[in-house]
Length: 138
Image 1 (cartoon, rainbow, N blue to C red):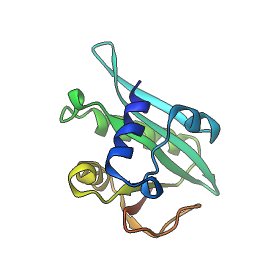
Image 2 (image 1 turned 30 degrees about the horizontal axis):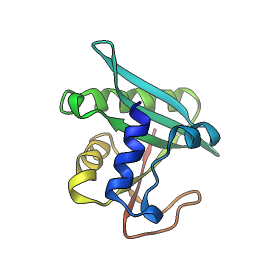
Image 3 (image 1 turned 30 degrees about the vertical axis):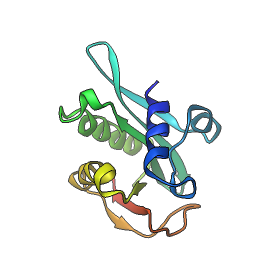
Image 4 (image 1 turned 90 degrees about the vertical axis):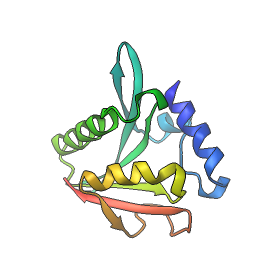
């Protein structure tokens, strides 16, 4: 399952205190609405939305399978998630991205291409060296 791969991969790249990836149970527990992108009958990317209140939403558990990377799948899914958030009445999207240069750099580049910029920690997050916080107006 791709969400478990996302969680396990995050654990490989970040210390326990710095890893914010969620396993399947945690996603369900905190009420994340999950979306999937399919290619040739296979789920190749996932991403979730967690309402934060006051028109804000958090992007959670965004992950693309290695086989689908570089094919525009993540960009298409992110655009869909942003539109879903807009349609639901949200006006700001936040996310936490890791600082690991090798692992998280492509994701941060994707988010920047879609209008995200760095911001202060949001919600229950606190500033940590391993995290970059980003937001964009929807």
